[in-house]
Image 1 (cartoon, one colour):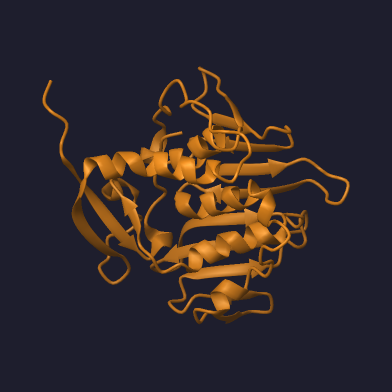
Image 2 (image 1 turned 120 degrees about the vertical axis):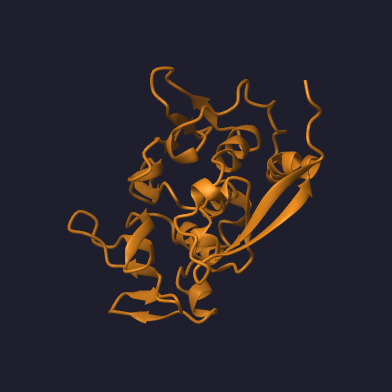
Length: 258
């Protein structure tokens, strides 16, 4: 067997909303190991289900590159009706993780910011129609307008070219505002994100749209990034992290693993 490579070629991509989906393990593994979410899978279906310890929240990953690939739903509580958030297949995992990290951080719930527009206004987004904002490059829209079935839902839509939709995130009317704000704050973050499969993940290679810096990174750092994330999130909990999942996430369509 050949020796493992000492370095891995990593692409650092900006803007992050066009970096492609990334590895779903960035979401699922910390939920399971650091936050105690239980997982189950059906060997006949390439999907993942994760349930919170109180069984009120469910994360569902479906291998569909053209629809809302990831759905987070929460049962009704005494002070809030049931709610949901869903994300298209090319939504960067870092943005979804911002939502799940905030959901599982009960200590910060009272002090978390709750205006989804604020992080975007701080970096120069402009009013769009009557109920939304548009990014300076006119490629990303955040709208609070809803549908007949959900009159006050939030929609985050990313486009390229002649309004070709890349991905869309949706937050139901009753989704806690702090979770929507966590998503828009991650969206506003100018820092590039790392990808090792960007050729498959990028929706476009237009040099005027995406900036990609490729560099060799020590393999031990690439392999240890997820473990470091697990322990960082576990430090918020009173229960120590669980042992690793017994098997690696199974490959699904669009170069995504769940």
